[in-house]
Image (cartoon, rainbow, N blue to C red):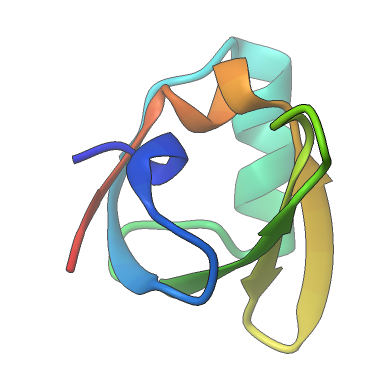
Amino acid sequence: MRLSELKDGESAKVISVDTEVDLKKRLNQMGMVKGVKVTVIKRAPLGCPIEIKLRDFYIALREEDCENIKVEK
């Protein structure tokens, strides 16, 4: 399952991050690594960006980037 498929309020565990190199490096620095729990908080009115909670902070990611992050419930 992909992070972009989660509904608002759902949580999942990250399996892999398969985004472009620069974004993957930045997400890893923020703690988005295999096994970490992420929660979808809400989506913008048109669906992009998606606000997620990662550890103790919130970030907004484009939907196309969330499609490259694999998670499991």
